Length: 217
Ligand SMILES: *Cc1c(COP(=O)(O)O)cnc(C)c1O
Image (cartoon, rainbow, N blue to C red; front, side, top):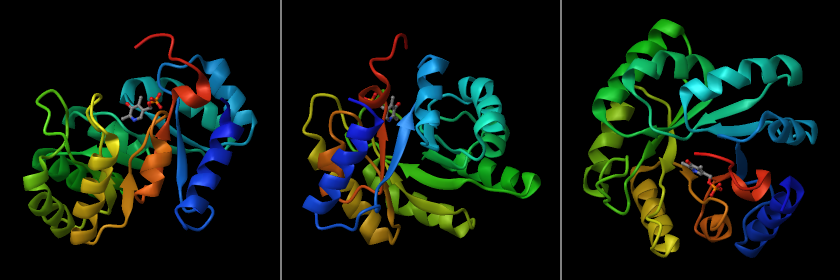
């Protein structure tokens, strides 16, 4: 697969779902990939990327941005409060807002820094102990709490359990978003982004299908 193939698959999935062309943003997940692969995708003209660690992103993206111009950068991994300032300065979107303490920290730091990335509330749709995200039963009150702090909540995000049909989780996320009046849905990865688009994904996070298998991590 390649960037071009994935873009074509997204266009087909949008059409199959009766959705307008261009309604789904492709976040190319470049975590752990060798810089040469990332550079190849930048050279093809793609400008929207995802990273799951603040430190790793800080090590490569300032340089890429200097060379390639504006790049839309999304944090898709868990965020510790002690890295929140750096994340706010580096990223255009944070998909892992999942607890009140982090939301409050982002609200405070965004005031200080003078900018706030677009935010996605991560929901632990599979209620897995080892996974980040707010529990579905707590999602409504947490989203309300974020909005009351004037945080720019653009949407919700989920990572379905590995051994379950992802569509059930995509549908649950879409339902929670609809009843809370948030429009964005960050869902779908290499193996299931077409099913996510059928269920309303606005942002798909695709790594290995674009860049090849991750060498490590
Ligand atoms: C790594 C990662 C992805 C991309 O996974 P692929 O299966 O390589 O497409 C998507 N979302 C999150 C949160 C990730 O950590």
